[in-house]
Image 1 (cartoon, rainbow, N blue to C red):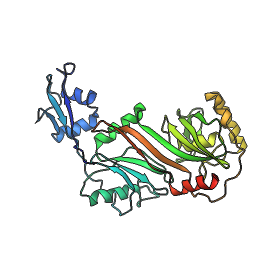
Image 2: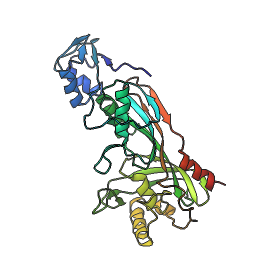
Image 3: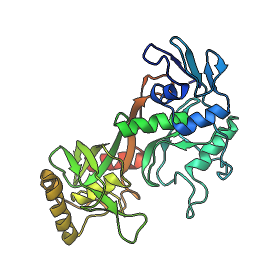
Image 4: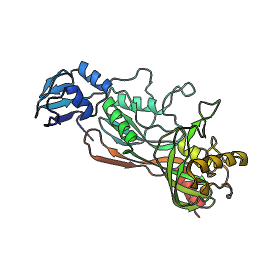
Length: 331
């Protein structure tokens, strides 16, 4: 899809007499850093002419800004890695991420990441754009992930997440037959002492809320849909473990010991009462090696497009390994 990277605002009576900067922030939802960048690029126009941000506008004036990609990141080496592109335009790109690939280079994974693949894709299409992450996914979580190609789109989409208007839904397969069929897991999450990766349920953790809904009961497992009201690191994985129904294949957050389960149950009873109703650790074993990663997939997003301002929705079907589990355990 081809879109034009520009935003227009016709000054109304309420905004007449205000500065350009005020309107850019309040009416056009531009961040202060982006306004500064556009100012130096002379990409802020009033009635077709470059304008100072402290200029005062009159009714019926037309303000226009033209965000642009901000160049490539020299530290990201382009690498020819296949991508499953669900959608792309000049403002952002949506990838159906395969499990097992890291999103950004780290000391342990300096290359062969999704960022390296995207850098190659953009370079191959003669687009000098720095990728701006909108979502994040763990290495072994599959599914929809979004990158903006310029700062305005990133800021616009992230603000929707903060306001709770950006829908993200996940599919996951957990051990056991979870009941009730719908519920809310409301348990605070904090970093585990001595680890930069692991998270845990803790009374002094950050508020964390996960909605779940059973899509299908399987033999010794449940296929669930998850909706996130908050977006903590490993939130779904930690919450599933905490209620005694860890994700199938999750080696970081397996079934809790009875001692830890008891402590988690006490926290849950104190924080949200009825969550203890779904704590259960008695379920038939899942066949070993049925999957070599946590059975979690980012399958749906819905939001307002940064430029067209139209409702936008995308889905990604279950990957083969999770679909196989559903088939095997659904018989």
